[in-house]
Image 1 (cartoon, rainbow, N blue to C red):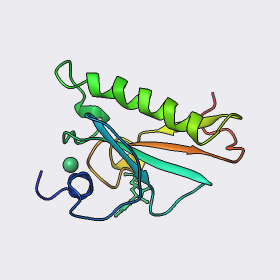
Image 2 (image 1 turned 45 degrees about the vertical axis):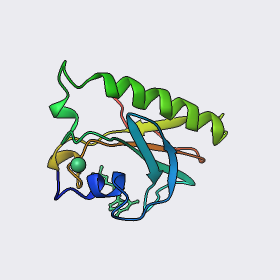
Image 3 (image 1 turned 120 degrees about the horizontal axis):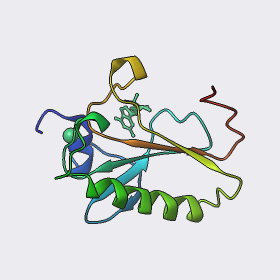
Length: 114
Ligand code: 5GP
Ligand code: ZN
């Protein structure tokens, strides 16, 4: 997608602080971190949100989670960490290219209860 911020970051047209890259996904530091570790994992292929995951494109989600687990180990997030994917405006999604926030490095409190 020519008009997508994260497609441009994947293509190197907009600079980012790369943390990890493979055939399927790209990971980079969030520009406005909410914790000592705050990394965004995106598929290289444009998928707008978690609501657009289908049988045809879902394999990349597993690949992204493999990358998340690897990076969490590298960053020594041994006490725990959280993955968040906001889908749609009510959830606060602001960039409409599927992404997974890896957040950690401090106690995160309870986000979902009941
Ligand atoms: P969302 O709100 O859609 O779940 O998450 C979008 C995230 O992208 C936010 O945490 C925001 O800080 C991050 N972000 C927005 N623009 C940029 C950018 O140009 N570079 C980087 N590295 N992060 C960005
Ligand atoms: Zn995109």
